[in-house]
Length: 377
Image (cartoon, rainbow, N blue to C red):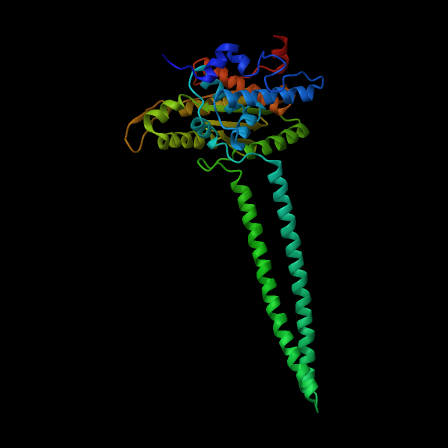
């Protein structure tokens, strides 16, 4: 007798779409009540989905798991949500190991608190630098004036013991001021080093460690900037998702190291089409996201489809075993950003087009239908 996985049982009981949040009852198992305020109701609904996901799959209520579930079901990481959907659809268990692996390459979560802390740290460094510069300047001036007085006292005729003692004391103070000046200069250099390290850490936080491409956090920032710039310049803007086909087979057959090399090969290919107005980032796992400014939907589709054909024509071999990988392909979904209400809605539409490309047989790029046509249908 086989034991039914909790997620599968839940999906079978209420339907897969119902488990994912489509068609569920308004009052969920956690809140147990309705809210007239649509914002509060939406929050309660999201909380229900997160709790159901963690509890039904026996996952720990940890900060990491809560963050992963929130990013998936709140729309911040549609790729993770789709992977969860496929996992449940195939009847496979969602274990802690699987979730850790699925979220391992997502990079640093775009946390506003971290951004605020970084800004405060930068302000503190600037203030510290200004303070050390002012203190060193004042110490230098004091040291110069003190040196002049010491020389005058030492050269004065008929100096008695008091003046000699004062001169000795002044010399000691001069030495102390010089030492303090050196310490302040060292502190200022340390502040400069800290500022440099902070800038490098910020850059590293936005780069995917495996491919060298920008990560999802960096892409989110670029998306907002390019969206505003395209609006101001009245230029077209398109967004696309790409996902390596049958990537699990590559990992299972050749190992994760070989899978990483396949990810890098696709990343290098997509990086070739990137430029000032084409941004490519690793969105997580085997998924990439692209932003093409100044290209119409038709032109952007041709650019991405050409890259897809080029990838499909390559013959990759496992360098360790010399065993061919077989044909490595990817599927894509593309959306015209200005055909939708906002960039995030366009991202969701591109993700949906990618899913349709997978269902249609993979190794193809599909264009998302504009919002008005979807609503009309």
